Length: 474
Image (cartoon, rainbow, N blue to C red; front, side, top):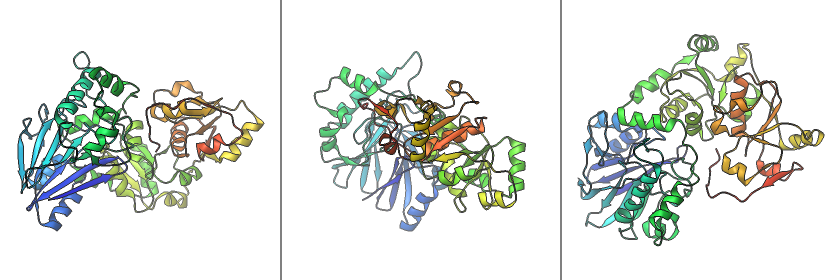
């Protein structure tokens, strides 16, 4: 028996490969199928099943493409309604994989169809559970993503989750391994650990949601309080996973079109495409194609794309470091942005060499920021961090302008004012500055530096008790 966790850091997502006696199963596969195909080809085994724990909201699963290419059966647990062919398993149903067995445990709560898969080893002993978003390491799945107005509330789902955990999962032996679909950094939970697996016994001791003395009412209150609104793309990705999507190979082919600088400019004008610059924040502020939006590949790229680009079908032109163009197209497709239509051949250097117009954003370090503040304490400062970070500590005179909600809150600031933008490291402030610049805000100063350095400078900050919600920085 072989179990392999295939973890993707940008999405904080775990897919799983299970193999026994020449047969393999994939649980919660990513959009691109080639890694799985390469793996089974190298091992000379056959993919028999593709198990989905639920309709994922934070990424587009690769189940459809993988099934078409391998003939493997797509398995969902009870209550999963789809527009494509799949096998709807019953609670408690067993699936043989070589000498091991995978048992369906319907565990609604995160979503109505959420299912945990219990792996029984060659001797029939409970070995591991693949919990999807039902149980994380240190947390449980948020119960507000699948609520339907007027029928099922987040409190209802939280109650289901309490029952699922107590009746289906906590009754298993303590030595059972727990393999969740996500780790720290995912918006599918509130306080996930950086660990990506654990034993169930240790989770019973350390996970707040598995406390033996917790009542159902206490559980519902704890798992529903402090939930921030989910990113806008979550519902859209869940719908794609239910109804289907364009093949990944076609998406890659459509996007992998090299364009000269002149062609790039012409296509941008003809299509009203969004120009997405994925280079480093340092390179971006030094110069970029006018009206570009910065979301760097080396930060939490896909989640920020999903939070900030409203239309999944928005045509996208890419400015990437040379050699990372296809990586960009792939990572966009992972979260449902399938309309990449080309990239700037040779990268930004080509744009400069051919004499095209270049835009810039003024960027300063924290020491210079402190000097500006000392000269004029009335400067307007935008803190673009998350609400929990802001509540923990912020510059006294700053205005909270969270990047997550920038599209909804543009009316809170004025295009003719000067603004200093900061976050925790400079990544998110660069993203925010690029968006504001593209929308006509010309007088922006981006602070490239650590928030800890701001705290240690002469700039006064206000500190509150840190909230319970742990939020990850890009």
